[in-house]
Length: 196
Image 1 (spheres, rainbow, N blue to C red):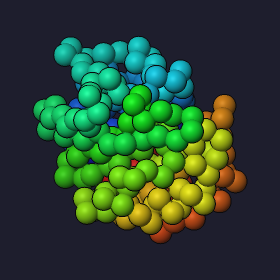
Image 2 (image 1 turned 30 degrees about the vertical axis):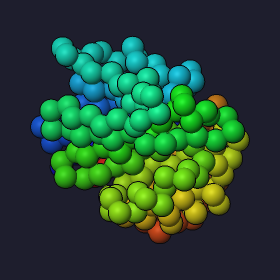
Image 3 (image 1 turned 90 degrees about the vertical axis):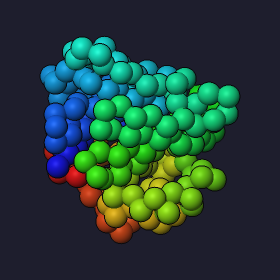
């Protein structure tokens, strides 16, 4: 079963059962010791795209919003046993043409990594995927706040929802995490690792 390490802010690492190492929006916290097989970047803001922060395994694949969104079309990727689908991500601080989220399928689990976003028109359609996990930003400054994130959690209907990107310049903020109220909420501290 895959594991997810929340590194803090908007960064996390997934390691599949077969040992494939995936980094999502690398920037914050610890846990960059494992060589990357796949790196996903949602957009080019400095706190989401430090793709050289970790060693790269031979053949490491880096997918940014430039590969994920071409000509207005959100692309799908199959990298070994990992499947990824790019989805919409946008708000007043993040242009829809240069930001994406990702839905990953690893070891039979679906994980929605929303990136920097507020509610999107696409979110209601994600309920049909029956997501196992969702990571939603909640800072209320660059992204939606806890109340809007709770509405989005209801729209997408993931079994478990992890609040991330809680406060500008901080790895974690307990009061913001607690303010996010949604069924299946799981609060992770930076450096905490769970099984998906």
